Image (cartoon, rainbow, N blue to C red; front, side, top):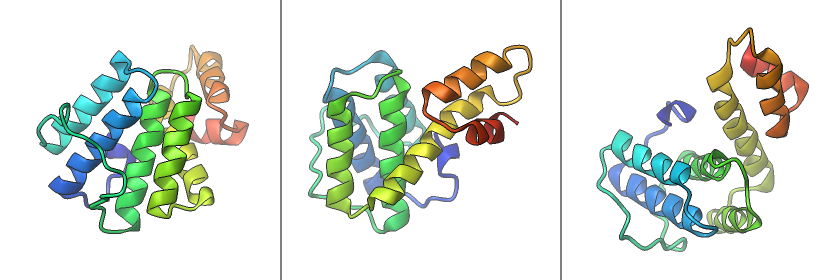
Length: 152
């Protein structure tokens, strides 16, 4: 998941708060195995302990700047997509976080496209199943050009 934001500087306090937020998002509409796996992978990648018993307080953000806020929102958007459906509860949660953090709707939309492209990038270079890969991109709501850019 670090590949989504390779240049971001996230400290341990921020990483733990982001993981807490991820768990809160996943729980808002029923935790799926894919969401749980993603949160645990994030915690492992960043070398933080499990946040499974922590509470999330969206008003207590330790994020230092715009880059860290974008990492958080982008990570939430990716998590919302990972189980194959984005619920209205997840959208409400993410929109609320964006409002509290001062992330503009235009930036949120950009981060959402980037999260979708990141998911689709796992299919980059496929030849035999190109049609199916393009279909995945379409289901994600990406434009034909965005799909072509990602798949190569």
